[in-house]
Length: 284
Image 1 (cartoon, rainbow, N blue to C red):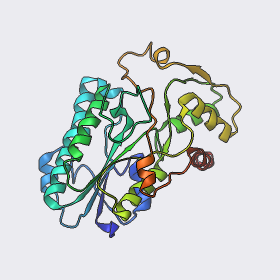
Image 2 (image 1 turned 30 degrees about the vertical axis):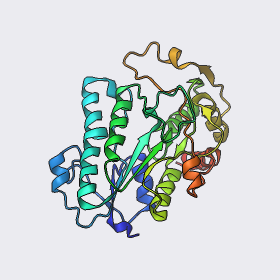
Image 3 (image 1 turned 45 degrees about the vertical axis):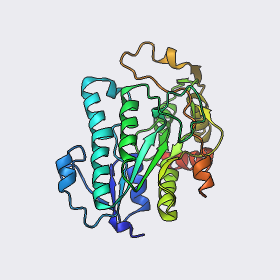
Image 4 (image 1 turned 60 degrees about the horizontal axis):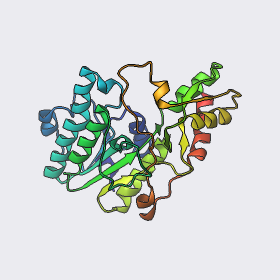
């Protein structure tokens, strides 16, 4: 497949950067040329040389979405923009690849399968749920649902590593469970679906491996980095008690990977990707 006819949206985000490495010939654009929150901008864009839209653009400030300004931005990027992209994909017969999140579930059960009914908690979660519904209207679509994204950019692993290097022994939530997803693996899974021409629909994609809490993930980060620091467990309720305006979090973020694995893609264990990630971060 000619990746020079792919268009990567959200190219400066963590996944966008990973997709750019995987698809160096892909087209990229910025808001001056294509404002995806504007139906007119999307409609007027020249789609003649595009076959595939890789939509890695999203409003991801979970707590910021609870504010009046953030709420408007979240709905514009995560829902309205996706609806416009799905419309143009339908009209122009394009493949739309859209990124979803485990936040569409309330986290009271799991592992979450692709066909589990959505049960979003906060504003961000509700906008992403609406965006998934919009993306599904494109006849040719992959909705790739993921969690705990770690890549080139601001993320939990980098934050904890920086704290550790400063000698900070953090208190970390221990009652939220999930699997990290390294963007290198997420990008590979997207490429797999496209290359294989897998049946259209929704696919869960995270790294494989034993589910872990944020606190235990922090311990794994410190261990790989050779940092001898204690990590104190706390609960989500206690951690956010003194922080007003915080969005609710799903406690169980584990996604069932049987569908993507039965299609032929075997995600790498997150511990192996963590080793590579920490090694690269420490060289910076």
